[in-house]
Image 1 (cartoon, rainbow, N blue to C red):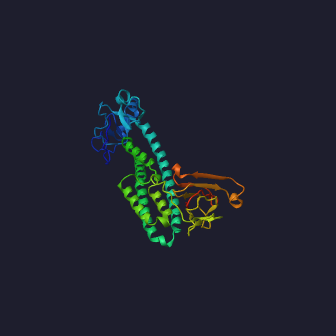
Image 2 (image 1 turned 180 degrees about the vertical axis):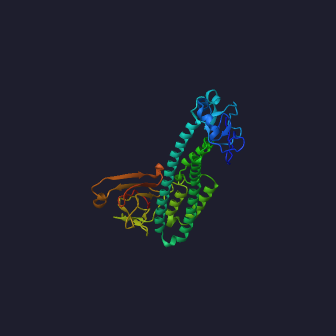
Image 3 (image 1 turned 60 degrees about the vertical axis):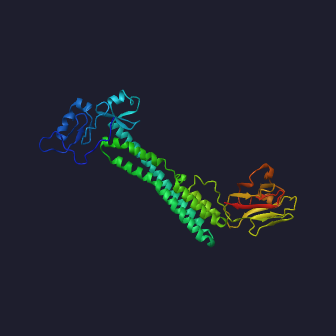
Length: 384
């Protein structure tokens, strides 16, 4: 089996010139000599030599052109194991059932493969750059909507998160850059043996680059755990005013492990169409209350709306007290107007069932409503 062949970076001279040694044109692997144009003619004009003596670009031979196991000339390249082998390796030993190629054929095919993979990686790099640009634009718009009261807390959290995301992306982009350099170096290598010897490492670099996935975030480790914990501590200080920003940034830094952290907004409120006896709204119109002494409450309609000129939420979450039975209904605007026509889709939960007191779903703005069961405290609404 072959090992790495040490190449002389200086000009290789003809071994057959006796006095004024001229630069070699080719090296005969079987004769283990390098020849200038004049002395090469015998190998090019003699049919037997032309067929049985493989010629390569000029190279300084260091005794590693023969198989260490069989002592025979390395003449073939095993595509399965990505190594040079002799004829005995190819027909007798572990390589006999492998995909074998001559040096020239392997060089040509593998070079084409590298070019194709380089194109794929270039497209992947371009796509990731576009995604990062879109993410940056989206996050800047979100940050721009934050109130003045959150500037100090948001700035601190933003700096931590953006720095961490940038470090994470930079670390993962190293594989792409490394593979690009390896591909370029391999394609510039003219010597067949040198190319084949370095191909295995190039292929490893390419596979690592192809496995890069920016959506997975930071790899497990103390750095990620420390970062997430620091963001949690800072997020708790501003969760009442900026829970949407906090959840969004945690998801960006470590999306694989924080997809369930739901960022919420403060722009959605209850707009009561009718209030039953003993019912009231909080000052921010985000909580509905019902007096405990009321044993039963008839169904009442509450429209969830946005305080923004152009509502942008599509998903909503309603949290209900654990000490009550409740029913949530979803209807369209037609029913909200007349309360006669239209379908109503409801979800009921009783405390004894042990259901989690949270209802959530997807709906357009101004199209989802809450219908009460018997309770003393009503839902808090949030959207994102």
